[in-house]
Length: 251
Image (cartoon, rainbow, N blue to C red):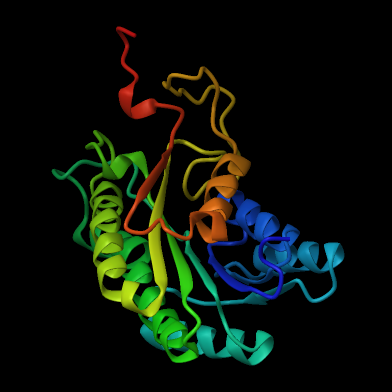
């Protein structure tokens, strides 16, 4: 029960990694705001949490690329749970299947708005609340190995995830004096692909451990960074990729 009496906001909490994070935090005592644009998925996860422990989950519909919507979401969470202690930024969309030569400008802007601007906006408005409360807090941003290396078939997504790593460090520098720790968790090909519900049976992965990642792998890492055991860790990028960044066809 490492998170007893803590309140967590998890964006993108309605599916895949986000859902696993919600369950992990709630399973250790947190009350979790499940933030998602899909009301069916988000409300379903919140109901799952409440079935485990009454009052453990609350669904909030929010367009995290909208400053006004993010402010409304934070206010609703505070009204519902009385405050906030943890923010996990997990929302992302992708431009899979294009290169810089054919990527539409509107798609570029939308991917960055949802995948990167959302991190800034949620950190800003949740951060203000954390500072006002005066008891510190934790922000964890979900990165990607795509932010460490270029992609042949995704331009905006890689740019957004790369920027999140540096943004995280800036947030850690700026918020550290308030007792707020900010870190990233960087996965590789976890569960179903971004924006898809089903993981292809033939999905190719290349790492050093010989198996694909599952959402629980990332949820474990996020829970660690949110816990007191990680109380002296900030501005870090915890890579949870099975060594994929170091794998190569030549072995």
